[in-house]
Length: 89
Image 1 (cartoon, rainbow, N blue to C red):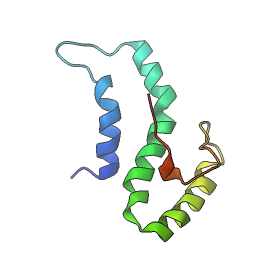
Image 2: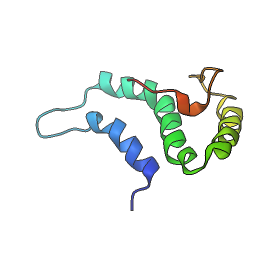
Image 3: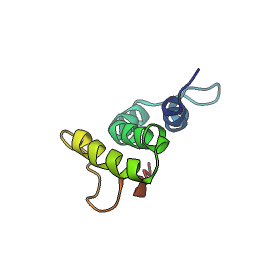
Image 4: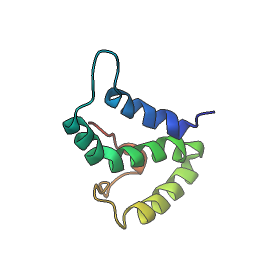
C-alpha cells in the first residue's frame, strides 16, 4: 500500500522516469536533485500535516518550522502557515 506521502512524491517524480519514448538526462536528474528538499517539505505538509483540524494545523506549523528551519536550504516565508504556500517546479 502506498501512503499519501508516497503518492504526492510520485506526482513530482513522474516526469523523471524513463519511458519507451523518452530517457531522463543527467541535466534533468540534477534539476530534480535541486528540488528534492522542497518537494519533500511540500509532501510532508500535505500528507501528514493535513490530517488535523485548525488548532492542530497551527501547532503543526510551529513544530514543522522548528524542525525544518534548522538546516532547510529553501526556507518557508515567515508569514502565514506552511499550508499557505505552493511549490512550483
